[in-house]
Length: 506
Image (cartoon, rainbow, N blue to C red; front, side, top):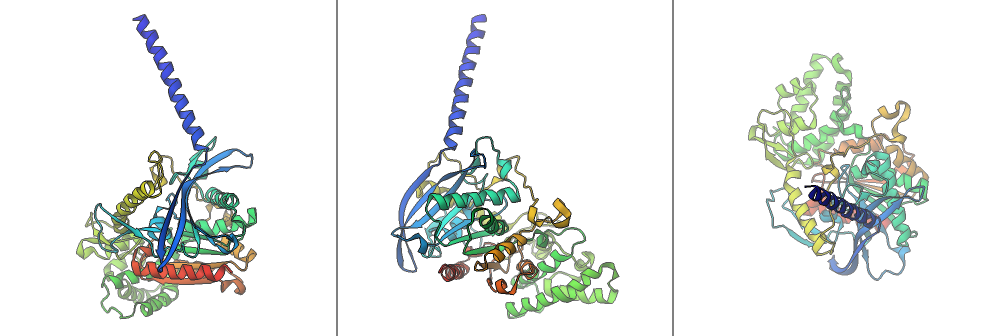
């Protein structure tokens, strides 16, 4: 027994040494940048483009020259370009926070694209990947960035993933990556663009400012896809009526699409113009009066809301004229035992709780996620040749300690950390410091996640100098949050972004 115990102890020590050595080797390997390089070609608008794809990692250091993060990215660069000062480069990412760049990557930005039946159900595999004729690779190189905790991106050294999970830390790390990529790839003199979606737009406002203030990098333009710069516009906080005002036009668009209006107008654009006027006028005035609103005025407002939202008068009375987005998504189609989508309200899903007050899942997200994930993971290892032992996280949500720090120094104002996070001040500062920087805002009319009227409100309240206010252009698509999964919207998206880049890079 004694000999067996000694042998067991020795074996355990040897095993622990082996495990420690293996863990140490993995830790050291993470600090070494990796590149998987492949060559391809694609036809965009009938023009053959040869390009190089680099899927890999780039390591970041802190002010003490210590390694802190390994950032995963995929870069697509057009072959044959000899003068980088004439070749734009666009840095792109999704939002979340906590999302990888897979959605934009396989939806519109990359040279390959997953095919989905929008807005019809897609079902299980197999899924189709095709050459993306809507990619901007013909006018700009593209670098897809995965924030820490997503893709191949991880904290390394003494740093922890949680060090990067916050508004300011995220802005800093993404800015740092862009600066290091620019330096390592000799792109200092290239026209530079940021293209983010959803929370990625919130990030972009901060990154544009941080790059300029800290690294002397002025970007030529920023593309905001399904924008939110002021979290207040969509947070439905108690006693704050603003979210109800800016969500109303999207409620109306959704009711119009699903034929829930008693007297459906023929022209959607004219209808939404009317709803905007009501939302910021009579409706806003009524809500701001609170309980001081007279019974007569209240009834007039509710009658208007019935005509614009398709909801019943009884429901709107009980809701006190204020319906939050999950309530609207659940209630609009209640008679059909379905719920409307959040990211794209054209989508319909089965109402799992027919008595429920709120829609707790998103039919659009549930429908397209398997297609995007399966298509991307297959593409990543087969066409981009990334080693199958690399773990690509489509989101950081799988980490049990994932939690976002919403504090943002620039938006604190007089109330410190109690202030609702807002990166509109960052964008204002960047635009003021760089008056030639252009902004392109792309909005989905059926986007209940980042309603277009909320974006309009934010830009109308930034207090921009008239000289730079004209640098902002808005585009609208009859689609949702990921407007580019609809082919007609993808074609318009490509046209709008390509013209924006070519027009502002000279």
